[in-house]
Length: 284
Image 1: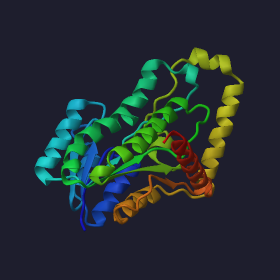
Image 2: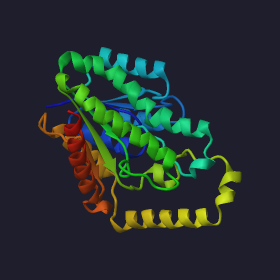
Image 3: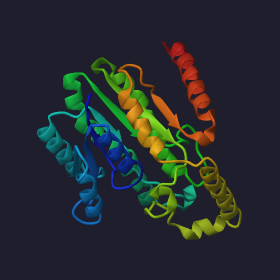
């Protein structure tokens, strides 16, 4: 059955592939992105030519923009069956070398952006007692890595919200899932899309040469594995489609899609769930 699906961050990477994939499957896709009249005008026009695709301008860091985008979508399409929170910012740097303002940029998009879209879409979903919300987090959302602290902190926060709201929304039959990608060759990782980097070079210098050597080794390892396992971003778009096609009530809370992890991500998720169940039992 065709669904009406709202996706954020569709100008590049995973979001663009999701739009194309879901359109081909006959779903109605509301492709959200910033700058549809300027910097992203070309891709907005490209996606608009696809069947069943409606491109809308949305800035997830702006309350009014989110409100307007969702109100216009509901007025035009009458419903939103699925929300995919894909818009995101990445970046690298030492925790001490980030200014507070730079760290806030991560949270405005990666965390508060998700809260804004939740609050815009939930009234309609609650009314019909049905819905699916998919949040794209990170393959490392269960643990942290050096030089990725602020970024992963924002993704950890989405994991926490998703887990909490899953129980809160159970009475309304609204399901929530986090997709946890590994390292994929998207614009976010290639450097062609600007990230949020540490902005205190004088602090970074104090950590050298050890920090630079460590960073280079980690980067070489990550990108070497990405090539070794031939990581294809289409896997994430197909994962979204798989979740949409799953029978209601069978979707997992966390859905890792990382060939490089070779199953260790699934082990980690299962172990965490088992420990949480024991903890909840002690407090019940």
